[in-house]
Figure 1 (cartoon, helix red, strand yellow):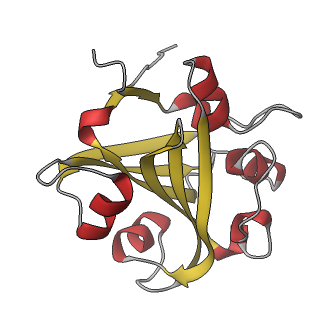
Figure 2 (cartoon, rainbow, N blue to C red):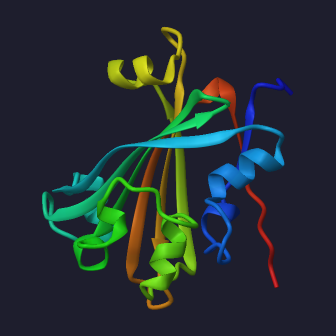
Amino acid sequence: MNESRWVSTSMPYLTPREKGQGDAWSADAAAQGRRGSQRIVHAGEVPAPGEVARLLGLSDNEPVVVRRRLILLDDQPNELTDTYYPTNIARGTGLAGTAKIPGGAVTLLAQLGHVGVVVREDVVAGMPDDAEREVLGTAPGEPVLRLTRLTLDRDDRPIQVDRMVMPALRQRLRYEIRIG
């Protein structure tokens, strides 16, 4: 396997962190001998895109809170991630701002009483648009992976939708499933 390829697993990003722990991305990268960081490029309320509205059980263009991030691995663009939250969960919280959230967003959600217990992920390959190609530094004709993750609470209420775009040739997605 190419050493520059990132191996991504979802579990660290679904579990609230213990007090004093940093965010899951930085810890995951460090565990693999790499440096993970991120830049919040936008946070606040926006009209829900169609797919996001459907997943959150909202009407098209109903307001949602989004955190748009550029995820960096060893200071190089590795992923674009938009995370959407219903306004009744995120409005007026750190999720609606650009400041770093101690322990990450999943930890803050748990502190607010919203714990994910079911996660659905869909991954498709495709071509990036011009803006994605430029930010991610992909070559012409190089595909991306688009991962959409829906997180539901114990009552099957949607609490979060993540939409990620990753250079396909630099990624390896790993899924570990435990039964029982």
